[in-house]
Length: 331
Image 1 (tube, rainbow, N blue to C red):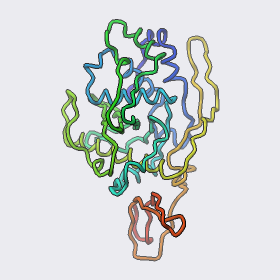
Image 2 (image 1 turned 180 degrees about the vertical axis):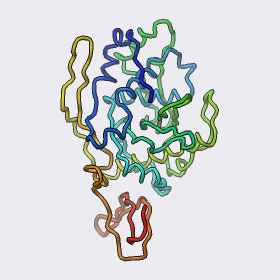
Image 3 (image 1 turned 180 degrees about the horizontal axis):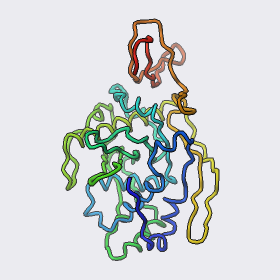
Image 4 (image 1 turned 90 degrees about the vertical axis):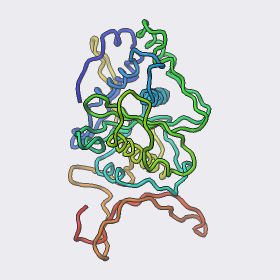
């Protein structure tokens, strides 16, 4: 991932905007720190996309989807969750259950960022991989735009442009799911899709159609978009299947200013699916499933409607981790 500096004018003219993106970092266990891309560089990358000097008329489907996620995230303090490699590899292979209705998905936030471990999904032939997933939604007929204080600053920063991106407003006649990501290097590295979220999830099993963008799309691009959708849906189902309460961030160190430099606050990282599978330290994974005394084979991770309640008349969606039925095979 390339490193770059933000324009000095941005720091001077947009202090609230810079604070919204650069005033917080998440503390990771030492054995996990190298698994993820640099948080500061990703935040700068997202900020620069928002501050881009072109109008909404020039924005394609990818930019519009990214913008919607950024706007929604800014309205809820840009939540970030980390996905560990062990669980990420399982979820990336898990097929989306077609029997599940979109009403089974409950969003924890209007939009949130999932920090993905390096090399999890991407364009394998080119060795280019997704650095994060931004996952958001917008209910039918609700309007969202850039928060006004940030929009005012960025409008000043883009003073030579009549229609900066911050003037964009989004509203759809039906509930939409928005998924966006960016590859770790190379040109045409942004990928995003906005789709109606209704009825069965069958249509999310594969990507169909081309995005409205000047960059050509090929089968490898389509495959990556399908990976993004599968992983995002499985993450949402994991978050929806347990009654998780999202407590305020645990701040390890408050933000402070030293001269012209802002030292970001340090917050304890939050993890996806830690009720299922967590690597508590290197080489030790909580959640390993013991083998059973039947012919050896692996059962893939999958979703199941679990009977519960009086007379087992109710059903709830639960995730079954992969398990080995004997001792002869390796995953």
